[in-house]
Structures are given as C-alpha cells and as structure tokens.
Amino acid sequence: MLGLEPIGLVPLGLALLNLYALVLVLARAWVFRTRLYRPMVLNLALSVAPVVVLVATFVTLLVVVTVAPSRGTVFAVVGVGGLVWLLLLPNAAYLLTELNFSHRREDDPVPLWYDIVLVLTLAVSGVLNALTNVVLAQLMYVAVVRPNAAAPFDAPDSWVMAGLTLLLVSFGIYLGRYVRFNSWDLLHPASFVRKLVRHVREPGRARTIVAFCVMHTALFAFLYLVVVAPVVLLVTQ
Image (cartoon, rainbow, N blue to C red):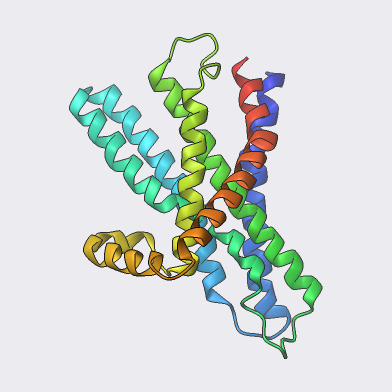
C-alpha cells in the first residue's frame, strides 16, 4: 500500500501542473488587460491529447479482450490507437518551444517575471506530459511482451523502445517548429514528403536537424532516467 502512494501522487501532480499552466495563460490576459495568446491554450490542449488517446486505447483494448476477444481485433485496436498516439506524441513536448518567448512584444504590459514563470510552467508540463506518455507505453509494452516475467524491465528492449520514441518526439518537435508541420499534415503524405525534402536540401539543414534531435533526445533521456525510471523500477520490484 505504501509503495503505491507515490504513484498516486504522480498523475495528481501532473494534472495540477497542467491546470496551473492554463490558469497562468488565462490570467495573463485578464490581469494585465492584454490579448489572450490562444496558441498557448491550443498547444496545452494538444500536449494532453496523446495521453488521452493512450488511455482510450488501453480501455478499448480491455473491453475487446473482455467482451469479444479476437486476435485480429486486438491488433487493430493496438495498431490504430498506437499510430494515432505516436503522431500526436510530439505535441506533448512541443510546449518546450514556448521558451523562445515569441508571444512577447516590445511594449508588452506583462512583467517579464510573470512570463518567465508562465513559459517555464508550460515547458515543464509539456516535457512531463511527454515522459508520462512514454512510460505508460513502456509499461503497456512489457505487460504484453512479458506479462509473467519477474523482472520485466531487466531486458533492454523496452528501454530501447523508450529511447527511440523520445528520438521521434524530438524530430516531431523540429518538424512542428521549423517546418511548420502538424500531425494532421500526414493526411497528405505526398505534400508532406515534398516539403520535407525541400527543407532538408537547404544548405546546413541536415546538420541542424541532427544536432537538434540529438540534443533534445539527450535532454529527454536524462530526465526520463532521473524522474521516471526510478518510479517505474520501484513499483515493479
């Protein structure tokens, strides 16, 4: 019982952090009589969306297994839900890009200290949202691959999967910030590929993409090992 208490605090703390970020964004417009910066609200909603999809997929999978177990249906639910989740996942950590303060103007009436707290709250909530998604996916992975293993996280495969997922998140953030792609742009794959190829062919772009992805993935991985991994290992011992 005592071992589960810290885990119960994690989703509560994350929910409160996201709520605090939303309150700060809304209060910024109300208190300082400035316009509401709607992209922040949208990005915050998109940051929460992946975990909603992941939970919905898991619940649907439980219903299918309980009511009408079918191998084909299970694979269909996992495939569709997993694909939608993966496409939305970069939106979770995209809040990290609010650190560029692109919403501020030279004559902004909002104190700088307020915006520092605001963007830090958004960035931290976004990163933690992304890490939460990855750890939930890792837990679901080991539950499916080795449900009866005494130490399911001793094998390296789930950690490799988590690392590759964090790399994809970094690449997705780059696409969103610098190529201005959205997840739904993949509904037009030909246009997506043409625009991406043109971008990569620009002088120096390939090196920039590699450096961006390596540095962001390293940051996410270090945070994952420090914040998430100890909790996972504690619960599964």
